[in-house]
Amino acid sequence: MAGFPRVMVGGISVPRLICGTNWFLGYSHTSAAKDRFIKEYFTRDRIADVLCAFMKYGVDAVMGPTQQILADAIQEAQQRTGRKILYICTPGEEKGIAWAKEHGATFCFPHQCVTDALLDRNTRTIRGIEPWLREIRSCGMVPGLSTHMPETIPYADESGIDVESYLQIYNAAGFLCQVETDWVNQIIRSAKKPVMVIKPLAAGRLLPPTGLSFVWSTIRPCDMVVIGVMSAYEVEEDVELSLAILEGRQPEVSLQRTRSKFGLVYRPPD
Image 1 (tube, rainbow, N blue to C red):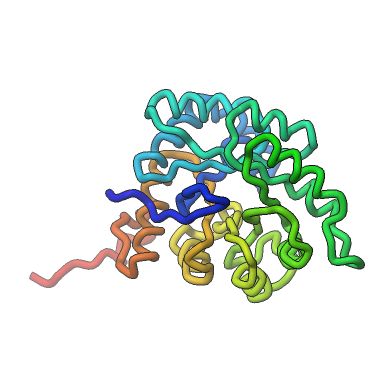
Image 2: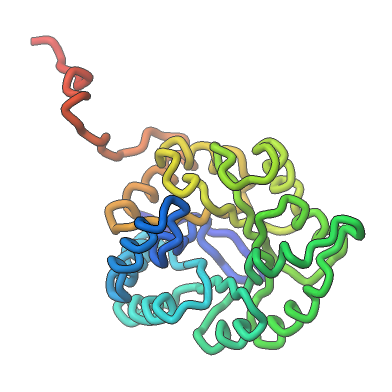
């Protein structure tokens, strides 16, 4: 299979599909029990297995926080494949910038817990973010912003701060979106920089064909989708679904099978 389509972000070639990490690190957005299961299941090597599966399709980028297990898994996957992975690091505190540099991050996007805390609706600015961005640049990384607030993108664009991309929640269910999805869509499509949309399957609340069809069909050619998975099987399925949607063809994926669907199986007449 050919490599996944790519776009340029801050002078760096990035695949339009990016590996997310909530399903690796225990952020299920479902329950403490599921978070615990994820944390106990995913070792460094199991995370590396999934990263290597993505890399088979040219998806060589991963977005995640400053966690050692993730950095170790990225290193392991790079050693197995002999190829570099683009690490889009999302630090939640300023000392995380140095950590990101030390662990080989190419991109550094202050996390939502930083960005959105600094957003000022009265002045339409993100007050105090510039020192973060200057430090990111000085460390040789590409700066961007991670946000859950729809105002962040237009305010950042208006103020002309030094960022090359944005992370923004966007999914067909409106899960964790702070305004209606048509408004989020307008913000993404009006952004001056490429946008990486996160939670396209609403943390498992949407089936992949539904969630991926929505985001791929409504974002721009310069935008990207960040998706979390729990196995190499899901990588194969999500890549094929995404490529089929982008190419306007029927996806070559098997449907799930249960006993209740027995009568739905088409049987050609004799």
